[in-house]
Length: 174
Length: 102
Image (cartoon, rainbow over the protein chains, first blue to last red):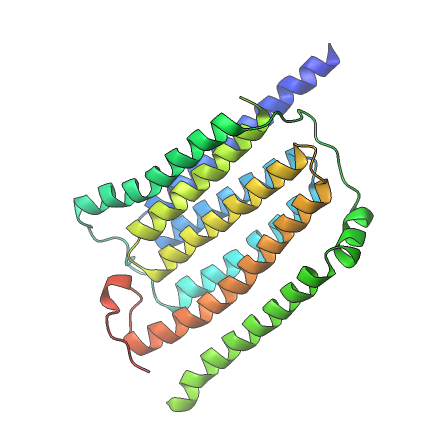
């Protein structure tokens, strides 16, 4: 009896988060001002973090909130601010009506193809995922996955250095 | 329909929205938002595939973390590129950037 209640609660949480993601996604791509679009993106990111929690991966969910919501959206916020895309909104003018259709087709066609493939070939799955301990995850990173782990740190270092060099190059020319 | 399929459909929705955003938005910042949506959908899909099937759980979590790291690196570089473009061309509309110079 109790199990059934928990299951109902889990379904409610699942569809609630999916609703958050859908609303956020539409806000991200359709809203006129880029600030509101960024809020939509943050909403979507929180929704996905909730789904990670529901999949019994709290560490990844917290990392999602920390990295995406904490770092990436702040970076995008700075991009909006520094490129003067905010006032009046470069997105606010009317765009040709056909663009809607073409863009919608470009998004929908691969989505429909992938969705049919997923629905047809999906293997049976668990209803209740198991939680992985963080220590197991850390050992997996440092023993089996040591090369990608080091490569990602190298990638981050290079991209930070590249960003700094790009930004300073222009200043020197002036 | 299994639970994993629902998660995958959500990921595909994010992909669809991202591609739509990339094609529809006129400013480069809007395009960046679309790219973030797609990357997030990829992470969600990897996670669901590992957590809800007999595949090792750590694999999916590590994959999702790597996707996040790549997204962070990409966002940094895009911010720098946007800065340079906006300084050089005085706007960031994708349709108006038609000059290529070294």
